[in-house]
Length: 223
Image (cartoon, rainbow, N blue to C red; front, side):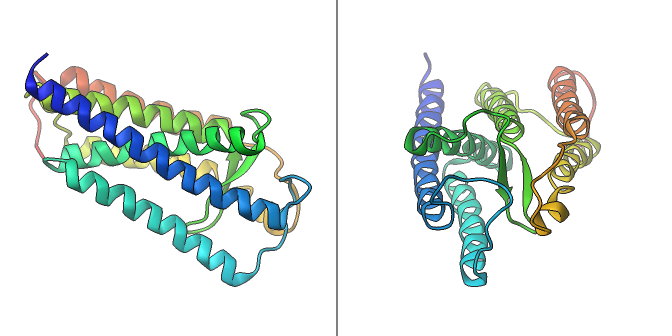
């Protein structure tokens, strides 16, 4: 094993430890909130949360993203590595957030349980399985980017590739939004648009892996 490979594996290991620890902090806060607002167990329709607490939660989520990106900035040698470490840490953090909740309070009961996934810019809702699949894809794709970078054969994304990947991400986000109105009206979420989610995730992965396969031979514009 070369020195550069050892350095890469060390960074990935430390990043994993960092993300798992952050996930514990996140899950611990949620345990406290659920003890206060859902003493009989988390369920829909949601209990009304005081505005100051809601604003604090939104700030906490924003701070979490800043911390994950700031850590990635400290170890990434360029924009590709920085974004890859951020995406990888996000994926590990998100999956371990649910693993810690399962360990601490035995929730979720199944991957099909609904959850409040995010609060910015509006609350997102969906089955736990959906963010776990997204996070798994982020981890795999990020590791591929980091390995290629370590080999001196960096993945070059064209502008059109970035636009398509971002569009796929927006489609995934959109799949979490439709039930917002129902939850606002104190109704339980009804159905999740898995076909929309599959379109976004599948499309994003298709664009990424096509670029991985073609990056060594196809002409492109670096950004």
